[in-house]
Amino acid sequence: MPLTDSREAPLENELKKRIRALLGLFLWAAWGLGPLWGSETRVDSAGGITGVIDDETNNGDLFLDGNPAGLVLLKTHDRFDLAGQYTDSYSLPSGLGTNQQVITTFPRLSNDSVIRYEGLMLFPDPHWAVQLGGDLLAGYNNVAGNYYADTYNNQQYWDLLRVAYNAGPFAAGLEISNNELDNQYEGGLFSPTVGQSVGSNTEDRTRLRVGLITTFPENPGPDEPRWQLGGVFETQLGSDVVNFQGDRYDLGGASFALQQQNAMTQYVFFGPEVHYEVPGTLILRFYSFVTNDYTSFSQQVTPPGPGYPNLSPFVSSQYQSMNNFGSFRLTVPLTDTENLKMGGSLTEYLYNVDLLGTGHNVTTDENREQISGGFGIGLENPGHSTWGFQFTTQNYLYDHQAVSTDVLTASDYNLYQVALGGEKWVSPHVALRGGLIVEEDVYSQSADQTILATSAVAGLGYGDKGLKLDTKFLIGQEANLNYLVDNTYTLLLGVEIQGTLFL
Image 1 (tube, one colour):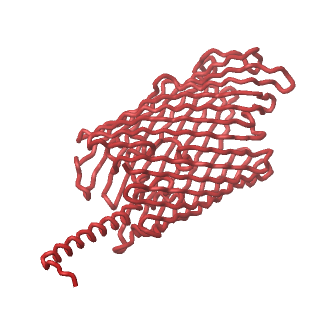
Image 2 (cartoon, one colour; image 1 turned 90 degrees about the horizontal axis):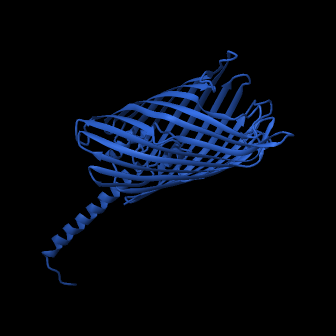
Image 3 (spheres, rainbow, N blue to C red; image 1 turned 30 degrees about the vertical axis):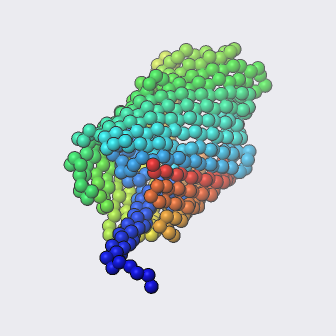
């Protein structure tokens, strides 16, 4: 038997206890915090139950509304986020349908308007934060018999820089973004009487956005309720110019060269927002955003004809919109290990567009009044599983009135969607997710349409202290039950992956 110093045994035992304690603490953190390191892909692969699953991409932070000041207030650290998505849809009968493929570094099945957790995010100290993000999209579209060129390919480049500073009483942020879109059109029908042999469309847009957020009480404790009041203002740097160049021809006639330009000017976007939180229990969020812009139009035709004359620049449209949004998230403990989760939202969206002629007179007026809402409820066992149900609905009325004829065309649209889904953590680092979504769209106009859509989603997630990976697989079908008498069906396949490396 080896000889040992009795004084070393207590020290050795104490060291082992500390190592086991540290190891246990690490495993507890990986188990308990891992599910919170989520992504939009994670929530969508569980059926899109945003009112049930807790996630950094739907937790009510003002950063999620596009306020650049919210970057410096995020509860995260240096990270690199990258996403990719591939979708393929095919409609039958092929003569009336469309075939589309899209590859993108931005998960557009989840969101297509705001870059959130994307690219490189750095937090050099508590007062400063920087984000470099971008997006690359490539798409193929074959639209048979639906005009506007039967086939076209599109590419989009989107990049941004965000900088935010936290001064204590308030945080300020600045964002500069550039969006470039290029379309290449192949031959096809532009209208029932006009064909198009070749064509291209380009757009270049640069915008500047500023944001402010104040938090009170200042520097609240981890369990202390807090308010955040913020606001954003955005404008363009230069004009948002859309250029089209192509060769068209009257069916059975000679071709003509066509150049069209739409230049958006006087663009402004602004509005206030509010966030209230009782940590671990309640989140309330509200915003009201307004958009105003003018668009000018010009057209050069060689040789000009009755249907396509030369037009010098004139203001062609005036656009105003308002988007009011409110949401809540509630967590109610039921037992020591299980919580009741509830969440809902209500959105009111209004817009008005006046189309102007060359004499600056209003030729057409368009209005839309839209209400949408949703409610989700489910059960959460933190670190183990979350299951839920969500109902979403949307309704809008759209009016289109031609001033010259005083003819009013109205349409009514209703959407009803039910989603079931959830996730199960099969280990401290691996989760399985899945969901089923059923949706009915009802259009009422001169010819009613009813679209029934069903889709199944599944996902696999991995999360540890320094890395998270979320994948999503989608298969779905849309059936247009009474469009132009003939039924049409669309099959949709999609794959999404989103990863985060914590630096």
